[in-house]
Length: 91
Ligand SMILES: [Zn+2]
Ligand SMILES: [Zn+2]
Image (tube, rainbow, N blue to C red; front, side):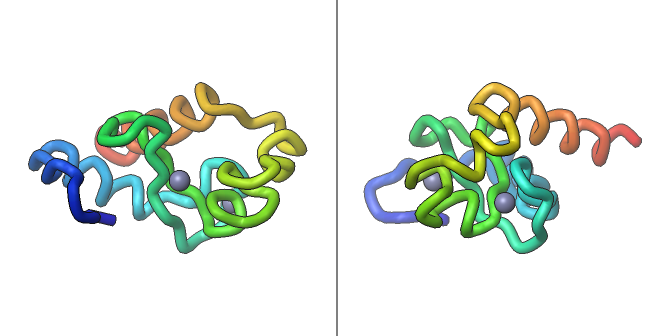
């Protein structure tokens, strides 16, 4: 997740991202996710995506067909991830 040239994550960012990594994919619900940042370094607006919904040919970095089929977009994805993190933290 951490690559060269990126600023180190703060403790808060690291904690949040580790919580996101425990969630299912926000698009299709699959387990085994990767964390996608819509804006580089904006970890609190990052979302968990399974590899096909992330880097696959129909994923976010591809045609985004998996997203459009499920009527998912950036705002809904962030909202879903934040709501799940909030529920996990606050019951
Ligand atoms: Zn998925
Ligand atoms: Zn990505």
